[in-house]
Length: 434
Ligand code: AMP
Ligand code: GLY
Image (cartoon, rainbow, N blue to C red):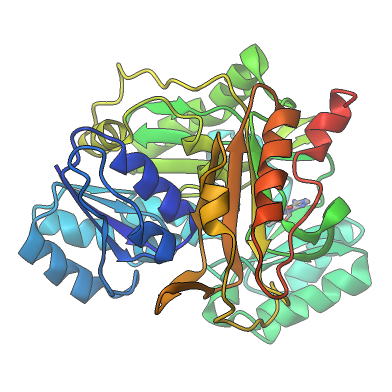
């Protein structure tokens, strides 16, 4: 089986690494990939994974590449090509491709669409309104005492959500997003949600259009600094399982979201084949969906795939083909922890091209995998090439062993200005009294 993976981050390295373990996979390309992805080999024949320098959003070039090389499966990592309709395009050409089509990708690409869908089909979510008009938006924000989340409708590089704790902030947020269009056309409409408080977790479900298979809960760490201080980032670390929602309670909460979601998809003619990733706040009034993503989380993927025992190539083929119903997901009992090492300055501006040392030493550590995100090869060196640089991932007999192993690996790796959080997994360990 020949596979093309699209994307270049830590999530895509984890996808490539796991797909490469499948005995079925005999050739793999990644567009555009990164230095870590270029270092992977296939378990079936020891053939290297081939990085091809095509951008993840260059649909015309990707289509031409698939036409020439005929992959048996294309796996799409990031949200942008999904929102641009890469799945529809590849299917038109007769290619098997994994990920939601353009209509289904709206769950991530449009917050107005998602909010209305949740309300229509009774999915538990925040009290909310959708607006194109600033005066009406201000009235609604005032009815919440200004305590709200103001969200640009469209994709805004993960920056389109402003958290407000009073009317002054809410007024400013509405002005920025809706009136001044700080996120461009993405802010032509906005969603305003009541501010929810509680523990935030990530859910993932693999879907095939009719069936949704729920993963264990995981937890991301979105803020740049320890103790959830600093700016919002793409995610500075994750762990799985998250003990705040597990066992029968997880199954019940999952069903409370996924059953009405599947009913709604059927009613609206939405054929969702991919990962549905609801961000969920566990509030004192029960779990509430903050947003839907239509792809794997990053860095959640790194902790999920280091625990997954299924053949990922088979699983994603089933998801794309609509044959997931009788598939059982299998997970290692060992918890997994991913610590992201980022460039100095991230999530603001940062330098690139800093040599990374210690990767060989980290690669020799047991129960450890260093996933590359923003890295590139420069001569015989691996250098930084993005904000999030590495996702240092380890697993162990319990969460504290996994975390100790991840931080031991972090200590072996060096690049100028490296920043990382020291408290990944702390909420779970504090809860367990350790
Ligand atoms: P979103 O892209 O909608 O997930 O929002 C980004 C982040 O903003 C989430 O991960 C939450 O941490 C926070 N957030 C979003 N909506 C709310 C809300 N209604 N109440 C509190 N925090 C929120
Ligand atoms: N971990 C956050 C995201 O993937 O959106």
